[in-house]
Amino acid sequence: MTDDPLVSIIIPAYNYARFLPFAVDSALNQSYSNVEVIVVNDGSKDETHEIAQSYGDRIRYIHQENQGLSAARNSGIRAANGEYLVFLDADDILALNMVEQSQDTLRELGPDFAVVAHLPDLINQEGVLIDKSWGFPKGDTEVTFLDLLIQNRFPTIVLVLKRALDEVGDFDPDLKASEDRDMWIRIARKFRIYRLSNPLSSVRRHGTNMSSDGVRQSDAIKQVHQKARQRGDLKGRKSIYWLKIASFFQFQKAMMTGHTTPINA
Image 1 (cartoon, rainbow, N blue to C red):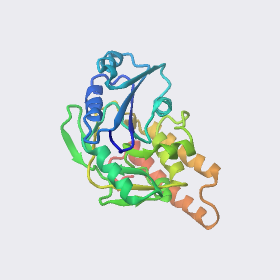
Image 2: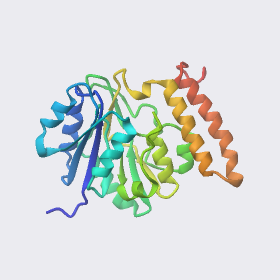
Image 3: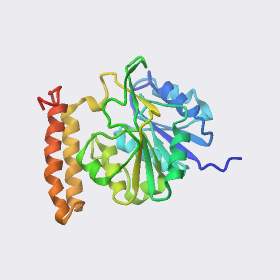
């Protein structure tokens, strides 16, 4: 019997049957043994159902009509029994020590911290390494609320304290992208976030990623900023930072919607 807290690994899946086994296997084979794996089939039209069913009782399986990534993650959260959660997209892969190292880090950091992220490797459709950390700043570091508001570069795969999500609420189903960034911004208003520099996952690029749609990404980032403004996240003298946030947003938008070099953006 282990004293380690249960970690729920939530895998939302939509038409990624060809990648799903790699994601599920990486979750099931973690060096940290006390995990449950939850696959949420968000109305896929491919063989996702059959592949998920083939794992039997090794995973927990949820099937729902297509409602989008946020809704699929929220279904996984509601089904989770874990004290901690990991969100893993169905086309990505966890390093086998991801949960163990993230848990060790969170334990060392103390109770003020609720999220541990890490720098992922970038792989192609066949799983071959393209780049390590792909443009993220190097080094282990705390990531602040203001960092998340200004810059869009934050890892998508994290370990998070479930109690923090219970406190700030669900992923926003109205967001068609950047829903994870919106969540970390809301959490960062109440808890602290840390990012490790060593790669503990691999993020796959295959041409049909949601993040490849620059217009949708830009529109969603704008919505995230609007939500933060409406909450009054930066008040008084700190409101000057909205100028910096707006300026950096225009740069990001230029990069995501056609300009391939920073100097052109």
